[in-house]
Length: 67
Image (cartoon, rainbow, N blue to C red; front, side, top):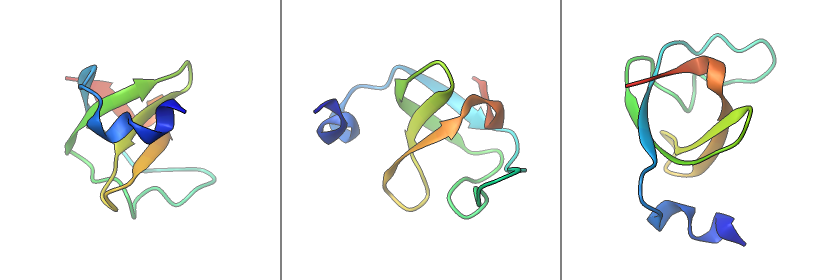
């Protein structure tokens, strides 16, 4: 149940949101272009960050670049 402690987990790296042009989902409501986010967990396709709603969210890596 690692998802219950993600918010307290140390930051793995920092990433910057470069766009919110999602084909399928509404991403512009929870990500801000140009903002730097702390990666709490990572998979092959997703970064898990605390988004603008204050909750942990998983987003495709295509929206970010490493800082």
